[in-house]
Image (cartoon, rainbow, N blue to C red; front, side, top):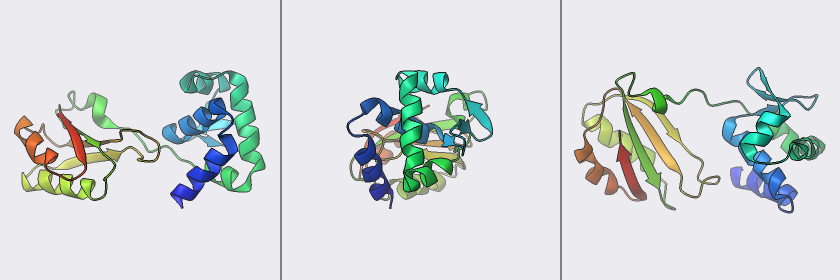
Length: 171
């Protein structure tokens, strides 16, 4: 289903790179379109200018993207039901005395989340949060895991043994 939806988005916007960047940015940030064509992050209205700046496009691309989405029943259903994922603790983990593990994922990503969380739990460390970038959206997706305490760097080699892991950073 996800691949079919991406094909539909690509079909609608392939000739319009600016509109494609707008659609991708909306999905990345969890932005939805209301019935009146306004853009929201949860209940916070987002200005066309703010989204245009974030997507690095002209403001006119925002309006035309919304029009195309609203004319297509499937895309309108998708973009009207997006909700933001919530706060990622990565940038404030150090302040909260939490650990951060970033794992770059290659083309073979199946089972990486299960294998990494298993390895962490076997070390007796609790997991506070896990966030995986979409493998369809990102060229080099990152799996970010926030742990209850900082993880020792000697685990890097164990993470690298997991099939599909290409790079590991521990903070």
